[in-house]
Length: 507
Image (cartoon, rainbow, N blue to C red; front, side, top):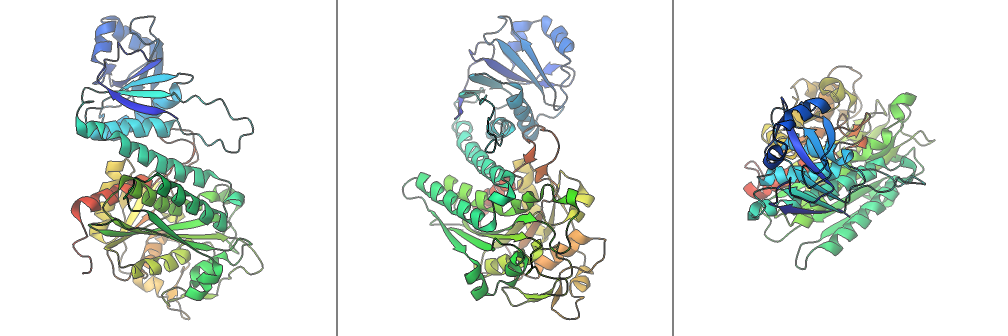
């Protein structure tokens, strides 16, 4: 496993097998590389021009040093014009894939604040991520045994303390990526529930004495029926693998706030009887990414000892075409007693979330945040890099701010008043699951979910776009599962730890 250390040593004198420095526009080396500039002198500008290092984001160039500096290899990564934490995170991710077969790497990127140190560690580890569990002959690991982050602030306590939280976050994101990348035949709802239980056990084993542990309750199909969770049972009825509801509780002494996290966990989505086109099913193993995010964020909060109580709910089901599959026209009764007319079996996520949100309300949290790969409409509206955030204005703003700090982009979206008429358009049930109107489907879905939040402060993250990278790697994002949402949720919990319960929370 790679270890990370902070040092004040200069990059030109560091004896690592590769030294990474940042490049700004017009071929200017970023802060942290001053002695590299001095070592090369006038030769540097010509050398940068020769390798085409202009400082653009995503740019990577390698230069054998020939003894000019102590390291045999100088790696140049573009930072762009604004080397903030997001830019540094991306550059560190690009560097991780550029440096192969090196036992030691020194990162001389801008890292003189806790935020930048976190970005360097997170970016490098996440950029080097690979899912190899199913490779019969996996490539020889190329991750270095040691990565040194060079920073003049290495001896400052708050800077040194930034490494551990970054490592905890990366472990959580990697855990989410691994689950989402796992073939759906091997991660059915029961198997996913068991994997969550194993992760909880492993997390608890690693907690220091006296730290609050995470408790897990795995609710099977028999108990779901006893509880009246008609949404989960209806969606899961077409599958040979029955649904599960996994409830986690992290309750540290002296908690200053209580947050409920709710995640959609459709382990595979065929569309049900409204079967998806073949091309649309190719990556539907990603449909459980919301559940993966809430679980991993909760475990990370426990590892960090955050003084926030977390109640997490992962609604797990497989939406398949079986002889007992739910039909358009069926009416389901959700956990809180609300009846819902099913009109589109491919809009199943909101049905399982309805049950989970009903359970979350009973926990009496200060705020609820749900996260789901919910609608293609949101991808059409915002593209595949942004999440949409809807709900109460204050909570939406807090979640978007958390995402900005964490390096995950999101955008506020409205829930117009007229959506209330649309979700109540059923003539046979309390709510219509879908009304057949093409426009505003992501807004309709959020309005539907709001009906199950009990009036509590709430935000909904629709992550259908950014949760799975179908293209090549870029920055700290590799191909396949991105782990989107883990960092945002963890940062939101940190913020709640700092300010306490939401002002509008019930007494």
